Length: 148
Image 1: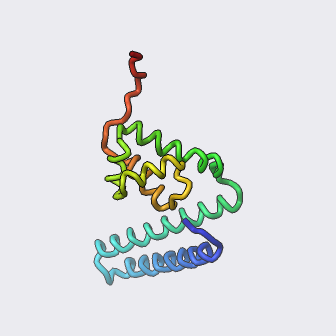
Image 2: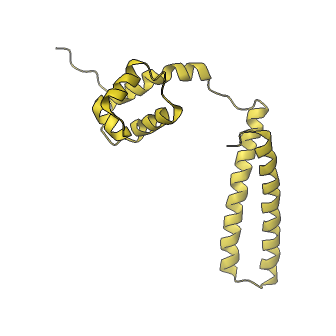
Image 3: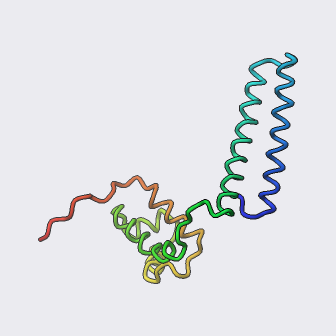
């Protein structure tokens, strides 16, 4: 993801260079000086670079021009602590189990949850979210529990 105008300009410059490289490669292919399989491998690699840059540039332009629907930041951030706890519960993980997977002490995770993750770094929140989304534990049942 391009994060500023400087990166955007740099990406546009790189894109033009990769396109020029592709033109040079095509000229070499026409001359027959290089084996066809090697040309194809190089062409594929260059095309992948071009495609990646085009995607990043288009995404940046769409955001800047207001063509991309962005999620509301405040509502997403406000809901995050509850979402993390709900995911933990849905994965049937105890605080101890999640803490072990995150490489932190159980009492620290308990503190995070009791304070709604208010003083936790974005890195730790991201790590916990990744663990919860990729955990191979069975998901929560989709049917309501029996009332006793």
